[in-house]
Each structure stands twice: as structure tokens, then as C-alpha cells.
Amino acid sequence: MERHILVVLAHPDDEAFGVSGFIALNRAQGVPVTYACATLGEMGRNMGMPMIANRETMPLLRLEELKNACAAVDLEDLRLLGYRDKTVEFENREEIADRIGEIIKETNPSLIITFDSKHAVHPDHNAIGAATLLAVSRIPEAERPTVYLKAFSRTCREEMGNPDVVIDVSSVLDKKLNALKAHASQTSTIIKEAEINKNPSVLSMLTKEEYWTYRW
Image (cartoon, rainbow, N blue to C red; front, side, top):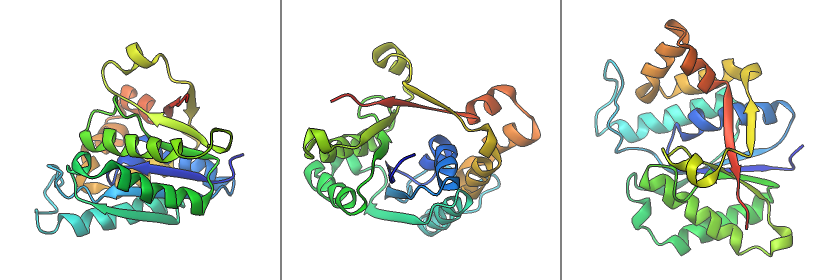
């Protein structure tokens, strides 16, 4: 049982797709979880089907969606880092690491979940992963928390091997689906495939979450 879990990702909905099942399982056991979200995803191309946002309303909508998604998995400690969507790679990495380091010091997590710095596809994903690893690297080795990485590039298994941790989240699939539904501007297609079309490949993808353990 973890002491405290810190999740550091780039955009609203990153947590819903990749981590919400694991969060729900741990929250059901009373494990504290903190989510530090780097941006509001305000530059995202998806605006709902049918459209429910425009470029002006997008930031507030995605913030509201994020809060609702957190509520769906009983995640109460949400931290907004305030970076602009699609620009995290251009921010000062040392300064981002400073901010993440402050959250680590405050929450004292036994486990941190973030993106791999090379195999998370989006530049924001890779950048926030790199900054998180930098923050953890500053901690004396014997005191560092475990770090789980999310990776999903086409070559991630070829270069990283198979995931070290595969978690069955089928027991909390309803909570994960509710977290995904909360991000309505982004997830209408996958919800349709999961709930209406009962697409086996989509359901299989949603009921397991995969992580690579970072080795220093």
C-alpha cells in the first residue's frame, strides 16, 4: 500500500486515459493521491462532437472537465501548474523541476507517475516527464520514491521492453469510464466505442493500465 501517490502529467484527460483506474483503486484503499497537471489543454483540436466549445471557451471548459474527472475517481488534490498548452517543451526545465520538487517535498510520495521523456508521443508529455525525472534525480538516491512511466510510442516496447507493471482495473471500470466521460470535449468517440458499440479492443485497452518502472 502506497504512502502517497503523485501523478504529474501534461493535459486534462491524460489522467483519465492512462491512470484513472489505478487512481480509483488506490483511493478506494484510502491512499492519498495528488495530481499536478501542467496545462489546461487549451490548444487541443477536439471541441466535442457535436461541438461544445470554441477557442475562447476552451480553457474554462477543460478545467471544469478536469475537476469533474478527478471527482469521478475521488481525487481531491489537484494542482494546476499553469503552463500553456503545446509550449511545455520550451519552458525552462530546471524551473519546472523546481516546482515539481516543491510538490514532492510537500507530499512525500512513495510513488510518482509521469510520462516517459522519449516515448510519450506529444512534446508536452515528453517535457513534463523529463522535468519530473529531473526533480526526482535531485533527491538522494536512497530516499527517491518509485517512479512509474507511461509510454505509448510505436517503438516503446522495442526500446524499453515490456511494461514492468500491468494493472487490471476492470473492477473500477465504471469509475474510469466516468472520468473519461467528464472530458466530453475530448472523449466522445472512445466512450461510444466502449459503451455503445462494445468494441472488444477498446474495452480491453481500458481495463488494463501499463507502466514502466524507471531505473536510475
